[in-house]
Image (cartoon, rainbow, N blue to C red; front, side):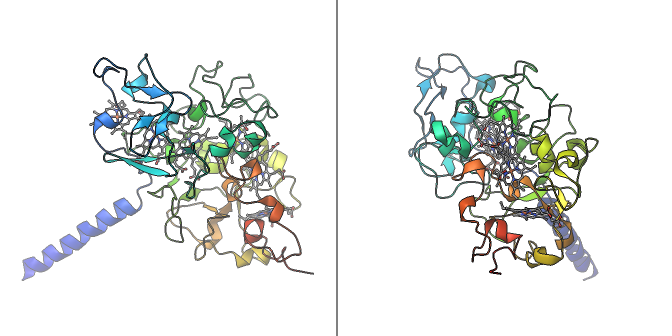
Length: 365
Ligand code: HEC
Ligand code: HEC
Ligand code: HEC
Ligand code: HEC
Ligand code: HEC
Ligand code: HEC
């Protein structure tokens, strides 16, 4: 009897430890499935190349890589396609299942998907021309932006050469650092087989190992987000000056600030009302019109917040962030916004978007 009880306690303790470990696990990025889904040992089968890449390459409705062209030269790490090719689909699905591997899709070539993932989708920006305002122009998806010859708000001094990822993500390589650009201008160090890395969605700076973003990842990349299933972003109780870097904050805003510094630092943004640019990395006030938005009990996926401690979200520690208003890859709205800005009318009866936080600006006088 005595022993049984002891075992029960032990079991409860083990279950509790298991639960704590897994519920606070911040990174969930490990691939699964047969090697052959993603790798080719010699880039040859029956004497024909296996690797497929280039414009239009992506997974089709039969779960096969199609489009683009077969690559005579093998790809790095023996992969069957590039970052773009493997994360693209010619279907409307945003998570596809290839023989036991779940692949998150960020570019649907056939149209803007019904259920885009958290970062949005590169479909619209891929169309080029006037559509370049709908996303980041990324190598393999869109050519360089014709109006933006550098990242808006870029601070002078930070890697200013024309092919630097601080000026364009549409170049294959950064000639200054020699590093890969494109997707890897942001996902600097991928680790598809390693869950032990602390960084959120492979988002890192390029200085050393400590400049990374943290956060809690929704296992479905917000394909169906709701109150209980969504990413939890890391923010910081700023405003920040130049001495406060990504290494200290691990904030998603510091990450965007790496290329768009003037939109993040207090020198250019201001440090209290009246602000000079819309603040990010400041606490969402608990008073005035902001008191009506409680993201702990009523999280808005349309205008989300970050938290100073994503494992312990509280109303007092909710933070305004770049992703409160923007998606990152691409969206259906200009300036990669999360909603249609032209429908935000002061003194009308609008809701959502800006009004999620500025709850009194829609009220008629
Ligand atoms: C769903 C896709 C996928 C599957 C399945 C997969 N890999 Fe990978 N693997 C990748 C990608 C993408 C990379 C390159 C990027 C990176 O390292 O994050 C990679 C990199 C690697 C690397 C080099 C980097 C490292 O982590 O050591 C090795 C070795 C490797 N894979 C072996 C395997 C073996 C062996 C299998 C089968 C048991 C396998 N992979 C199955 C996608 C996959
Ligand atoms: C051969 C297929 C393949 C290639 C090539 C590939 N990926 Fe992935 N990637 C995957 C799969 C599968 C996952 C989902 C892993 C999981 O289940 O969490 C993934 C996940 C990701 C994620 C999300 C990680 C997370 O935390 O959920 C990012 C970001 C990413 N890949 C970026 C890249 C970049 C950048 C490259 C090029 C360097 C690349 N991928 C190349 C298959 C691929
Ligand atoms: C590695 C550098 C880099 C990072 C990091 C980065 N950006 Fe950008 N961003 C650029 C460049 C370069 C452009 C201009 C060319 C283009 O539109 O792609 C740009 C353009 C933009 C635009 C305007 C798009 C348009 O065409 O009108 C928005 C909005 C934007 N970024 C938001 C963000 C947000 C939000 C983040 C963080 C989640 C972020 N960026 C992180 C480099 C970066
Ligand atoms: C400007 C920076 C930037 C570029 C360029 C970029 N990503 Fe991302 N990516 C992000 C951020 C930030 C997130 C996290 C989005 C979130 O959680 O809201 C993300 C998330 C992801 C995910 C997880 C799915 C999701 O939507 O959350 C995948 C997969 C991915 N990226 C792949 C890619 C691939 C492939 C490319 C190149 C075609 C690419 N990314 C280019 C910044 C970038
Ligand atoms: C996630 C919440 C959030 C969202 C969404 C949001 N804001 Fe704000 N906004 C704030 C906070 C917090 C402040 C700073 C308030 C303070 O200093 O007390 C602010 C400040 C401002 C200011 C400057 C006020 C001043 O006193 O200088 C303006 C103007 C503004 N927002 C407009 C907008 C518009 C337009 C949108 C939609 C495009 C928007 N905001 C979306 C939270 C938000
Ligand atoms: C309150 C909502 C909101 C927040 C928070 C916000 N933005 Fe914006 N952003 C906008 C809107 C709206 C525009 C359209 C242009 C304008 O109104 O100035 C825009 C435009 C941009 C552009 C394009 C500028 C151009 O010249 O085309 C970039 C780049 C950008 N934002 C990056 C960021 C970054 C980086 C952050 C975080 C440090 C951020 N934004 C935070 C709403 C926001």
